[in-house]
Image (cartoon, rainbow, N blue to C red):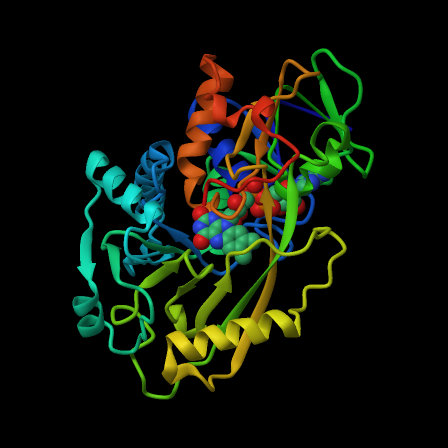
Length: 383
Ligand SMILES: Cc1cc2nc3c(=O)[nH]c(=O)nc-3n(C[C@H](O)[C@H](O)[C@H](O)COP(=O)(O)OP(=O)(O)OC[C@H]3O[C@@H](n4cnc5c(N)ncnc54)[C@H](O)[C@@H]3O)c2cc1C
């Protein structure tokens, strides 16, 4: 059996879903092919929630993409009647004195017209008595940012794509071989899917599909996420009293109790290497102990809070954290989209739009997104 399309996107995580959606909006007949189902539990996009913030240090391109993406997400959610998939909790950036990353963020937010407040320590202590700020001396607060309900947000993008005539195929694609122009891909079930253009948006699976090209350039790491139960009758750990917060100085971030699922806390530090198909997704006692110690210090009322849920997900890190959005060097009509690292989710709408424009309208890919800039040595620079 052979099916034919203008474009085939492989992978229905956030990158593939938005790319398929944007290609479709330009009038193409598009198939979205997914091995396990959109935003499944092993995908990087499969979590309950993801932060959308505008701050990116001095990396203005990502600030602009976040601005554009927040509009894109909200436009979609409003159109399909699901505004709750964006939770405007605000995002609080905790900083030490002269913290270069937060100072650079401040300058970029000013230059790009993002609304923010600068909060001195006295103001932080008054506004958030449930937080023990320790050595944090000041903070930036983005009132218009917050959290995306990630898994359901991706599924909503895919539902909208299907409603508008897109094909969602539950198939696993066999890695393509050869070179030149690719005319079709094969599935593990023996089907053939033909198209003029192909996008492999396979996240942490990219090194498995293209080992010669990408093993050593995309490093999936194991990331553990904890949800703690808040004390009964205590509204201090839910929005609006508790914002989403980031403390890169301490390598932690967290989200308030969204939809009564618990107070989310995670280490942003890269974990051990992980195989996204085979990994057992249970958390490790050493990381739980580290997370608990931080929780007790920063949020004293939660010192004895029980763990009520855990997740193990993976970042798919490039050498420095910049995305990979480029042509496959051996196939003129094949594009690679991945390397979301620990921060890609929020950018789905802008990324889909950018990639669609490069595929259909041409133009050079931004240097920082090219394959050539993806080194094997890991030097994290984009957070
Ligand atoms: C714990 C954690 C916290 C994070 N926090 C944030 C955050 O707060 N904010 C933020 O913006 N980002 C965050 N990120 C990063 C973000 O989630 C990822 O960058 C993003 O989800 C990557 O999406 P993707 O579409 O590239 O990959 P995925 O979601 O993994 O999608 C790839 C898809 O390709 C499919 N696939 C693979 N191989 C094949 C094949 N052969 N045939 C068919 N289908 C195939 C897979 O099944 C999968 O569904 C976080 C990530 C993690 C793990």
